[in-house]
Image (cartoon, rainbow, N blue to C red):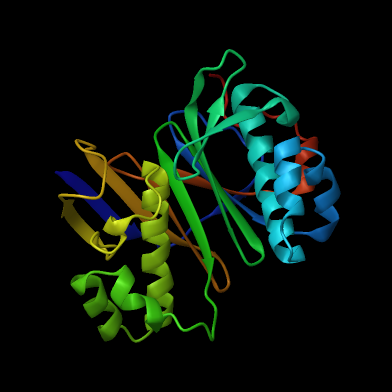
Amino acid sequence: MTTLLVDTLSAVQWEPWPAPLVPPGIAVFRYLIRADDQPWLYELLQTEEIDRAARFRQVADRQRFIAGRGWLRMLAGQLSRQSPQQVRFSVGPSGKPSLVLADGSVHHWHINVSHSGDWVLLAVGSVPVGVDVEWIRPNWPFQDLVETSFNAHDQAQLAASPTPRDLFYTLWTRKESLFKATGKGLTNDFMSISASKGVHQVVTGLPEGSGTWSIRSFTVAHAYVGAVACHCPVVSARFFTLDKPALGCQASLFGHQ
């Protein structure tokens, strides 16, 4: 049986990046997509990623992908002491990337990325980690997904909430971040696992014998909610804002390893 700890961070201090972070730890990064950053982020991509970017028909979707992969390469390069262009990833069955070293071994740092609307969210950690960000769309019919996405307890929480739209996105990002952290992706267990605040005992839907998982919600920006999940009893995370001017700083992101 697995224990699931779910809560909301009352306040998040977004620090400028880069800054020293001594492992073990978890770091969450947000990036506001800017059109003038697209050329240099695009140059970081490898051939397969360039091909994927070209297949997006909508400009906004293509920009989100380029920003997410470009910054993923920047952070992975810091972690592995490589240039962003040299970074290699292996991809699990649900699409979760793992950082691969030059000798073919998987790096001990875990990394994850999500994007929605104008924001990209990334997370790295010394334990399995997943992250999700969602734009709280004012007119999107979220009610259509409630019965197929949440168990009876969560549905009751939504029915009683004075702000059900906000709560829907909070619950959704919690679930997304958890299943991304486990590498399982969206499965039939998505509905059965509760995402309401509290301590939950999970019988199915997570890796067997997986111990304790924690999920914490937080505000990314106005009308954007995020969540980070990790394979650890407590989420002790630092939060950073990514921007191009910070690239001139040569400080090590994660201190000495």
